[in-house]
Length: 373
Figure 1 (cartoon, one colour):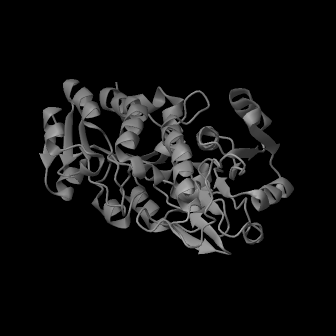
Figure 2 (figure 1 turned 135 degrees about the horizontal axis):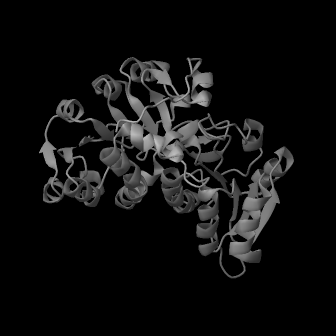
């Protein structure tokens, strides 16, 4: 199979679709890999690294799209990238189609693209590719919160996250005890912060309590406890996501207005629209804005802050699925792996995900494939 790795065009996206080690695996199995020149530079992988792994380096983005049968990306599609797609191609990427422009989805349908969203691929009830990024986003959220809690920003509280003898540590309140929230809690505890984590799922809270002990306070989430926790927070981490849907506004504008002046919100759900009503997407170079006296950090591609680690993490989680399709063919691979099938958002000109179809008011058709052997 011919596999293409284009340079990401999303503003300040520093990750790359596959690392040289993954390219090596594919090439040694008889597949052809085309890498756009410079695609890995922001993750500190050179063209020479890819050549040494057996890739063909191409210098024009159109050539990558035109020669590939399957594309390995990271960031959601832009309109320009959607225009470059060729009929019948397979696309792996974080898609978040429920919040994307409808005309981009229409291009996927018109070109009969098999679009597979990393965020929707399942395995044993978990989301392995999404979780790889969440394991990064959790700890990184504490790093950036600590930075903006300090006095570099004139709006901040000037507080040391872990406190010191005779001075209380900062209060970190985390909404959501999934993978990102769990790892944020562990990172915050490691920095000496006071940590409170809320979730509607008591099983997740029990896991946090079991792993972290009495150093963390677990609270069942409801509008009252969320509002009360936000008032107490020096740092508020929003880690709420709903599969294939736009994130609900769990933290309202009134709740934000009630928070301490100079507190920091990190909205980890911003790539799905944000779980804080006052959130709006920001960038790595201009990551924060102030609303109601509260600093908001809302960078959708936060793992790009550690682009090399993130690229390895993504590749490790994604390569089994890419390799499966390359080896077995699209239909056979999807038919043999229901978790991979759950990631298919569009196929053969129709939307194959009910949630996305409902959110965009487009026709849904159940995924229906035939074996190719």
